[in-house]
Amino acid sequence: MSTALVILAAGKGTRMNSDLPKVLHPIAHAPMLAHAMRAGAVLSPERTVIVAGHGADQVEAAAREVDETAQVVMQSEQLGTAHAVDQARDALRGFTGDVIVLYGDTPFVQPDTLDRMIAARAENDLVILGFEAADPARYGRLVMDGDQLHEIVEYKDATEAQRAITFCNSGLLACDAERLFDLIAQVGNDNASGEYYLTDVVTLARTAGLRVTAVACTEDQTLGVNSRADLAAAEAVFQARARAELLDLGVTMTAPDTVFLAWDTMIGRDAMIEPNVVFGPGVTVETGATIRAFSHLEGAHVSRDAVVGPYARLRPGAELAEAARVGNFVEIKNAVLAEGAKVNHLSYIGDANVGAHSNIGAGTITCNYDGVMKHQTEIGANAFIGSNTMLVAPVRVGDRAMTATGSVITRDVEDEALAVARNRQENKPGRAVKLFEFLKARKANRQKGAK
Ligand code: UD1
Ligand code: MG
Image (cartoon, rainbow, N blue to C red; front, side):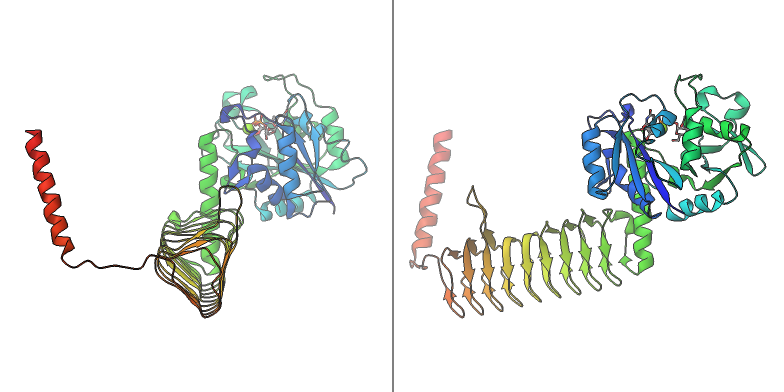
């Protein structure tokens, strides 16, 4: 059966107290809306319609990043959830099949839950997703009658007895497209909020003799984000789930609760992630690699058996080949370290290629920026860069070449050459003692003067 997604994302999110539309607030470095879209994508929807309102241009741009074919429709006035779904009517003209309504601020619905909603559709005309709420607060209450859903009562309109119900409405539903729009056309706004409630389709469907049921899922999937505190709670839910998935895949984490993952972090089997590692977006860590404590990675690729950290920073474009090593207080940006290359201590390697098995000494810096433009540093294979070398780019150091410690390299170094670019040392016999005496005398004079 074909499906179409309608994702409601027009709300302002007043309680976020933000200039950013609510659905664009990030969880694990992706906007909430992107999580909701990806959750729905498991159904391989024929069409995806996003209902936008506040910050529609930004919402549209974010939606297109996830799915270029997503249609974004405007709801200029937020008159309620039924009115919001109704805005998708034209975009879904000619579509036959089921509409699944998702909320842009309810990002974590799981694939098997959507499957169960679709499965329940076989026996029912309308399927609502519900959950047992630990604290039902202001959620709509699901009034069941056996396996059938009798009605949904919004908190504001509920009696005390109805408020005691803990089975709540997530807002998600599945229904045949034509039928849903027929039902929505009949929804009025005579209620405590003066809004067009999508939840009213339940009573309308039942009155028309249709079968309506509710499928239950765990509360962590229906978690709606309305405030910054909710956003932080959603982040925690995402992190807990993502960590558990990695552990299942065979990744070792000694303190998983201290590892922070991005929505797209990929880590291979038998990789080892030490405590307090933070992943920004776009990171792949291959099997057998080790990321040591307190490292920060973003837009980086770490190959098999490479070791990163402790205290390393990999920025976008960092590409570590097999068994490469990046040690403490090293920053790598837009640079390739070929197989077995080592940058072990206190270095910045940016806009560079480092050849296989080359060793970069402590304190080495690629001076890649002249204040206006960025320049490239090329280091060959099996080269040895002495400690505290300044590589003033653009510059090339050849294969099996060396630079002397403390050199400022401004010209290319040919293969197998040793470059020495520092002042020659001069030793002055006895001069240290004289200098000490001079300095002590000066200090004594100053102290006398101060009295
Ligand atoms: C809604 C449900 C409630 C359910 C709760 C779950 C209704 C009437 N109530 O209440 O039963 O327990 O969600 O979180 O449906 N939106 C629009 N346009 C509008 C109104 C809302 O796009 O005109 C979007 C919002 O941005 C949000 C979603 O729809 O993503 C839900 O709207 P919200 O106002 O949060 O509904 P609730 O009062 O929470
Ligand atoms: Mg809400």
